[in-house]
Image 1 (cartoon, rainbow, N blue to C red):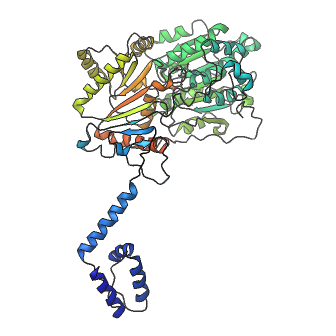
Image 2: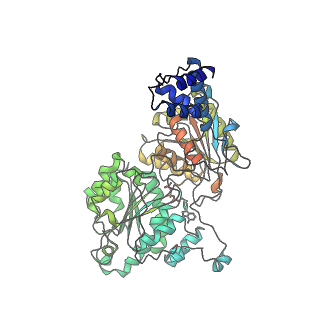
Image 3: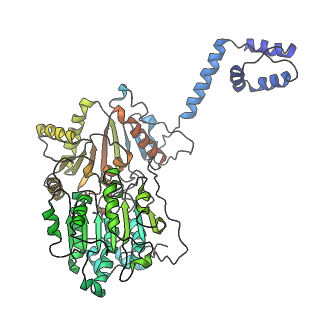
Length: 565
Ligand SMILES: Nc1ncnc2c1ncn2[C@@H]1O[C@H](COP(=O)(O)OP(=O)(O)OP(=O)(O)O)[C@@H](O)[C@H]1O
């Protein structure tokens, strides 16, 4: 300070020295008044030099840095329920706390690249008990007094279908069903993007069955020339069997035929599916469907519906060419009017819980993109608020022990567990290790024949075994109501994989939707993904990089008679 005063004096008297820009800025921030005076005084005279001692410069820099750090730290600890619970309680975040738009959250996983962080953890607590897609269930006796409650009947589905659903205790449409079913019944092409477990299978199957049921008998030419009414394309054999069993249960009372053709079976088996004539609904994997088309087992020119389920996988480069080839066999409508009467074209339904870019490029080749109505759920690409998600930073050698502990705890609770690995070889190795520990389990990975995989998955679904070690092949679309715990033994390689894996718990119709949990074990190389997930949780925002090209269609000024409006 002493020295500065001398500088000030020298300015006021001689004004002969040049003020270095860097020092001027530093001084300016701390001694704003003095600098204003200096600049003012030096305008008419020669440039000014103020000599600031090195120690003072360092002090100024230190103060600046400290100020910056203080600005970064946000006090998120508040009384009440916790959204984020961390090993370091200073980094907890109350569920009632909302980060400001420009506030930088201090992450519990901030130092997780450092070896000292082994043993650290944080938990994203659930903030609700039921999945957001499940709409408020109002007791039957209150229905008359509650305008808001919409049942499947009010969606104009035929009473027989509503009755079948009622027997399965499916009474109220989920939000995505409520938004999508009326549009499909009107004949629109629909792209439906909704979170995992929100009931997308029924979303497309119900209108498909309703319409095909109406066509049978009412449509003379159909009796003369029976044809397949709907093709559902799915990426895996397990999913094909799952969709088929749901469709069969719904179609059986109406005498409608549902068949499945999946990978891993020979051409003879594919032909067998068509031996008794074209099925009303065909569920197929891309490879099997192409084989069927090449052998003229079916024609897709008279389809009423073409459904692409798990679109993000089917539009992935490994499938995209096959999907494109298949789409050229179908005549896709460009407007609802083209879906009526003889010579009608097929409605296109594209369904998924995550969407990559590039979907539009493929679809634009078969239909007018403007004809596709987009239904995007509000929770798309958000972390599930009804599932507790724990992240552990552990040493490689401790992973197995952590897994064993978690499996033992789950075994006591009697719940089923999915353990995800990134490689088929890890699935096999982990299986041998768990055998040594005496943990009964099954394994599924992509290198197994599809028929074997499907059998293993069926026995897991039936409850014959409670632990399934798997790769991401089990993360897409499979309905795993029994599963209460998902363990990421290997951390997923992308946000999309995390969303799909975590989505195996907390599904609609699961009764206690809120008792599912996800446990992720992480390594230093996973930390960046973990940090973006933690940031999204603290900000309550979507996971980054998932926005893709999906935009909700602007409402058209037509006679949209959705009951929700
Ligand atoms: N309206 C409803 N009410 C109650 N349960 C429902 C309803 N609709 C669907 N379900 C049940 O919710 C579960 C999940 O449905 P589904 O498998 O279709 O989800 P999804 O959205 O396709 O999930 P994913 O994205 O993982 O494929 C199923 O067991 C289904 O029977």
